[in-house]
Amino acid sequence: MSSGSQTSELGRLLIVIGGAVLIIGIAVVLIGRAGWPWRPPGDILLRGRGWSVWIPITSSIILSLLLTLILNIWRRH
Image (cartoon, rainbow, N blue to C red; front, side, top):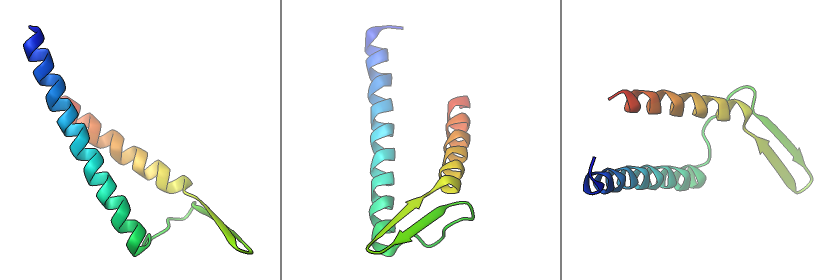
């Protein structure tokens, strides 16, 4: 491989990563404004006087599985 094709591949990868970050950022902003519509069982919500903490255990596992599936499919093509 010549260095020109490696640079081209790197450029394409950076564009894809940038697009993914943009889409994720837009989704986070929209979800933040609308409120998270669903909390799966297993996520922990602790509330006290004037504070709350949400520990998204199940949501993290689901997100990890989805990203693993997407990246494995993308990697095979």
